[in-house]
Amino acid sequence: MKLNKLVSNSFRNFARFTVRRNLSSTAASGVEKVRADCVVIGAGVVGIAVARELCLKLRRNVLVIESGSTFGSGTSSRSSQVIHGGIYYPPNSLKACFCVRGRRLLYDYCQEHGIPHKQTGKLIVATRNEEVPKLNHLLSRGIENGVEGLKMLDASEAMAMEPQLQCIGALWSPTSGIIDSHSLMLSQLGEAESHGTTFCYNNTVVGAHLEGNQIYLHISETESLQNRDHNSQWHPDILLLPKVVVNSAGLSSAALARRFSGINPRAIPPSYYARGCYFSLLNTKVPPFKHLIYPVPEDGGLGVHVTLDLDGQVKFGPDVEWLHHIDDISSIQNMFDYTVSADRAKKFYPEIRKYYPLLKDDSLQPGYAGIRPKLAGPGEGFADFIIQGEESHGIPGLVNLFGIESPGLTSSMAIAEHVATKLSRF
Ligand SMILES: Cc1cc2nc3c(=O)[nH]c(=O)nc-3n(C[C@H](O)[C@H](O)[C@H](O)COP(=O)(O)OP(=O)(O)OC[C@H]3O[C@@H](n4cnc5c(N)ncnc54)[C@H](O)[C@@H]3O)c2cc1C
Image (cartoon, rainbow, N blue to C red; front, top):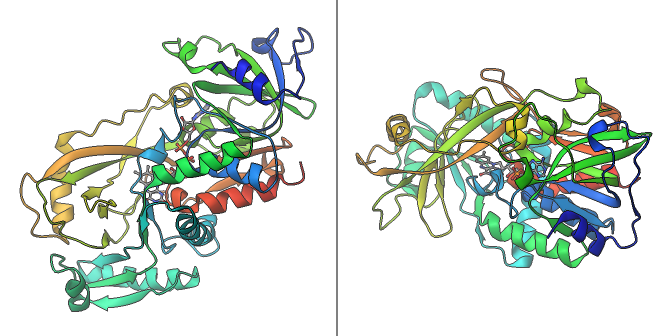
């Protein structure tokens, strides 16, 4: 359904008007304007959780604008679907706090709503002597972050749990697990819809401008943007005038914020992108592992690990491949390459055999890929989630979510709580 038709059906009480003067953006002059209450940009696992929180807890009227033809078609359908414990992140970071809180909220939600999930537990394994201090460091960090039940295991204890595993020691995390993230999104989307939220697909937010304190969101039908010359101006089909905007556009949230005129440009972090590919294990009647198995983390990711899905299928990944030369327009148009080249398997075999030496030749086949929205480039170390309000960027009623990479799925409900608290005064 066209956005203006949808909006008029859902927001009958909001005024619609067209004004041809006093527009600070020439691209937007003469375009129909529609007032709205809350707009969430992006229907990924985080945008859906935020929309649900805003309508259920704050009783707001929410419109979710999604450029794709359905929900969860971005990073949220390309993850490992692991519920993380909260071990890896520096104490008091948003990643640490939201992962631990989000995990507890997520398990409770899964139980209450019948979302398929399993608390499998996870082993983080050291395969060389020099990795043992890293495991000890992860243990103390995890304890400081409030992760329950962590325990160091010696090689024989770990290998008794997983006979095909080879390691010299392991950190056991019993609260880690797996979830069917599509069912989670579907359930939360249904709740949001039954509390008045409208999801509007095939529409892209292409920019915004300010008049006084009022945000004008520029929206175009996604189809009309295809094959557009990068240098041509994007003319919106409609302007939305919301009281509150949550920019939860995943990979393109920073690229999009750079197109908001009136925002403090220094508040917007640079965008980096790192692709992660998965390979699945061929011809396995009995999966070799019952638990999640992770090596010690590497720069940019958590290492090529073993993930199980709820049917017991095993996959390995994701690796880290930094992507270069992605400009803001390509990012907003979602022109990402998700191809998994069979050649990458060459690098997977030696990585996996460090902890699974029985991996047979030619047993890996290309799976899928996801792309991490990174806020730090190669070798730059840890970067936290950024959840940014007026105090940073200067626009009342706007919250930007930047760098929501892993553990974004685990953290989604805690992020939603935080965003709702930030917006409760608007
Ligand atoms: C390889 C990989 C593995 C991961 N594994 C895990 C894991 O095991 N556990 C975990 O907790 N986390 C994991 N994560 C992280 C987790 O998947 C993400 O943090 C989470 O899915 C992000 O959700 P999101 O809603 O912010 O973004 P997205 O899912 O990307 O949603 C953003 C949405 O915004 C839409 N959009 C973009 N631009 C616009 C626009 N201009 N206008 C309208 N709509 C727009 C997109 O189409 C998209 O649907 C992983 C991530 C990757 C890449």
